[in-house]
Image (tube, rainbow, N blue to C red; front, side, top):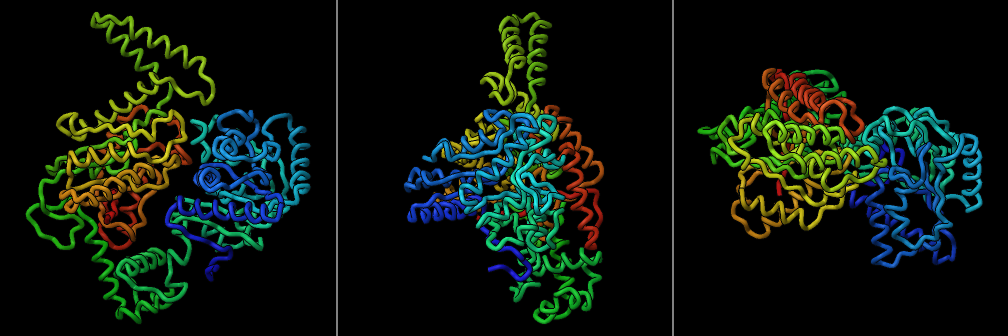
Amino acid sequence: MVDSFEKIAVQIFQNAKLGSVAAANEIANLIRKKQASNENCVLGLATGSTPISMYAELVRLHREEGLSFKNVISFNLDEYYPIEKEAYQSYWSFMHRHLFNHVDIDPSNINLPSGTGTKEDVKKFCQEYEDKIEAAGGIDMQILGIGNNGHIGFNEPGSSIFSKTRMVNLENNTRLANTYEFQNISKVPRRAVTMGINTILKSRKIILLAWGSKASIIAKSVEGNVTEQIPASILQQHPDCTFIIDEVASAELTRIKSPWLTGECDWTTNMIKRAVINLALKLEKPVLSLNTNDYNENGLSDLLVEKGDAYEINLQVFYLLRDSITGWPGGKPGLQLPSHPERSNPHPKKCLIFSPHPDDDIISMGGTFMRLHDQGHEVHVAYQTSGNIAVTDEFVTRFIDFAVGFEEMFGIDNQKSQGILAEARNFIASKKKNQVDTGAIREIKGLIRRCEAKATCRYVGLPDDSRCHFQNLPFYETGTIDKNPMGEADVINTMALLNTLQPHQIYCAGDLADPHGTHKVCLDVVFESMRRLKEAGEPWVKDCWVWLYKGAWQEWDISEIEMAIPMSPDQVMKKRFGIFIHQSQKDSVPFQGTDAREFWQRAEDRNGNTANLYAALGLTKYAAMEAFVRWHF
C-alpha cells in the first residue's frame, strides 16, 4: 500500500540481502508464469553494485530450485562509451560475470547496448535496439537502480521524458560514483549509451532497487514533484512501479523520518527525541526554546496531548542530548553515573577497535582512540582487511627501491631485492587495464598498509606491536574490487581473536555507505562472531559492550547518537596528523568513491558538523565530536 506521502509503492526490507531476494522472487515468478503460458519473458536488466545480490539469488534459484532462463529475452539498460565489451568494467562483462555465465539463457536472447564503433554506428545501433525491444513484444519487467542525482539508466538530470535509446554525456558526479570500478575518475568514460526514459516507461512493470546512502534521493523521487531534474521522479507516472529499498535508504521517507505526520505514533523515548530534535533543527531553535505553538504548528500536537507540557518534553530531550556527551569513552572511574553512556567499572577496560581498512580506526574514531589510550585502557586494534587494492603501483616501486637502497647502504646483499624490483617494474610497465596484481605485488601493497597502521598505533601511544592484529580476512583477498561474501573462515578468524582478547568494549564500523561493501561484510563478520560466542555461553560476552562508529562516508543522525566524544582544536589537529601517516591514501586514492575530498577533510567536516548540530540544539559548542551508537545483541 502506498503511504499517503508516497506517490510510488515502496517496500522496505531490513537489509539489501532480503530486498534482493524479494526482487529475485518477483522476476522468478514472472519467468515461471510466462513459461506456463509458453511465452517469452522479456526482462530489462540493470548493472552496478545495487543488483549484484539479486543476480546472485537468481543464480541460486537456477542451481538449487530449477529456475530456467530458456524463455528469457534480456535487454540491458546501458553501457559505457567507448569501451570494449571484454573490458572488466563493461556491462557486457558485468552481466556475464554475475548472471549469464551461470544460468541457461540462450546467448542469442541476450541484448546489450554497444560501447564500440563510431558515433554514427551508435546512432544506428540505438534505433535498432528500440526496434528489437518492440519486436520482442516490449519489456515485461524493467529492473532499475538510482543514482545520487536521481538518474535511472544513464538518463541524467534534464533528460526528456520523451527520450529514447541514445548516447549521453555523463555528469561528473555520476563518473565519481563509478570510480569504484575504475581506480580513479580520469579512467571513467565520459559518455554512455542508455535506454531513454520513454523506453523505460513503456515497460509493463518496473522495479527500482536502492540500498544504503540513497535516502535523500529516494524521498525526493517518491514524495516530491515530478521533474526532469530528478529523472526517477518521472516513474510516478508509471501505472505499475515499485521501489524495493532497505532500511538505510528509507530513512528520509516521511513515514520513517516523521511518522507522527502520517497517523498515530507510538511515543517512545527515542521517537520523542527524534521528533523534538527535528523540530528544533527545522525552526533553528535550541531545544529549550521550543514552545507550545511550535509543537502545534508543526504536526506535534498529539505529543503534547499524550505527554503534556512542552517545556517538560524539552527538558527530557535536552537531558538525553546532554547525557550522551562524555570525554570518557571507557567510562569515568570512581563515579557511578546512571545516565553516562558507558559503565564506570571495570576500569581500566580492555578495548578492541575493529578497523575494516588499515586507516578506518584513525579516520573514523581517532580522537576516541587517543582518549581511550590516554585514560589508561588497554587498547587493541584489529585490522580486518589488508586494504591492498587501494595502493597505487607507484608506491610499490618506490618502496622496493627503498629496500634495495637500504640493503646497499649497509652492505647487505641486495641481489634478490633488485630482482624483485625488476620484476615489479616489468609487470607494472606491461600491466593491462584491470589486470590482477601478482601475489608478490599484492603482498607488498598489504605490507605498505600494515606499516602505516603500525605507525599510527605508535603515534597514538600503544606500547608495542602486540596491540595490532592484522586479520587479512579471506573474503577481501580477491585482488579485484569485487569481494567474496562473508565466509566461515572470516568468522572463525574473528571468533578466535575475540576469545583470545575477551574485551570489555568493542568498536566496529557501522557505516553501510562504504561504496565497495567492505565495511558491511566486516560488520556482519563481527556480528555473527559475537552471536555465536554468546550462544556458546562464553562468560566474557555478557560483560562486553559493542559501539558502532561511522566511516569516512557519513555520520549517524544526531537523534540516534548515544555517545558523543568531544574534541578540542588541538585534538582535531592531532587526529589530522595521525591520518597523514597513511601516505599511500593521501592525495589521489584509488577507488575512493563519490567524494573527492581527502579522508582527513571528510573526517573533520563530519566531526565538525556533529559538534555544530549539538550547539544548534543548545548544548556546549565544541570544535568537533565523534559519535557512536550501541549495538545490543
